[in-house]
Length: 401
Image (cartoon, rainbow, N blue to C red; front, side, top):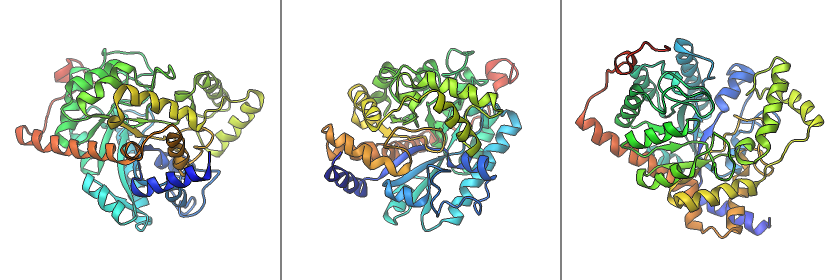
């Protein structure tokens, strides 16, 4: 990749920076230092411990970030709600500690204002519908605290929605799950369909009046992993107005990497570590495993292959980027941290993507979806008030049954 291409990429990102769909920094801070920012200060160089710090965000041309307020799938009920609140509190702490670099964003206008000030627009997305504990009141509470998307499931099927990586129980969304989507539309909270089963994707597209989001998912036709998006769903995005944000996670983008990852996770479990653990102890254990079994390596071109396919099926107006930094142990060569986005843009320039199309990918599409969701919320909230439905009434069974 030539220096001229990288310079051109950086110039493009100065004009249309990355509005990224998913970064797990809050959970990484929880796992590594219990949210103590004195012990892990992102104003300094956190290389070797995190994928994200302020200098690397600037180097990567990141102008906006959805910070994931993720909760582990094994959490349930009040424990899940409390953990989500702690994650939100961690984002609040980051915003308070670094006001010159980060600005809270609740609306599309806030995102634009942050960019004009040279700060990273900071939004929040709740990863996993278990975080609301089957309560629409809790959903509304998360919205009031600043959450602007919710991923309907994480890795496990929940009481009202099927996950892509667990046994189905509802053939998509239950009746209560459909009501969750409708209430999210009324609030202006984006419906995030990463992690959900294809049947859940299709149900949400049928029910949602607002554009949906895939905050960090790639193309299943390019890499046949259940976390990716089937072509029929990609083809439906123009009719909905939604955006699919390609992720960089190797096992989701590179055929063969999923098998290696499964073995690596089993190695972590044998050492008493969590399958999704990225703490220093986990990374040492993974390095031991990699010495015995070399890791298949994705590259910048691997991700670009997904974007080329997604563009062909969904159209360039329905694409974005969701790197999943600090939520995965490994990343493609050239995209090892948040400073890597210019290398991906340079690769797309080599593939003859136009400057206008790249600007849609990095910035304009995600911003449009935010605006459109806000417009739908104004319309829907003028027609109906809050829903007080319960899972017991709509699904005819107690939660968890």
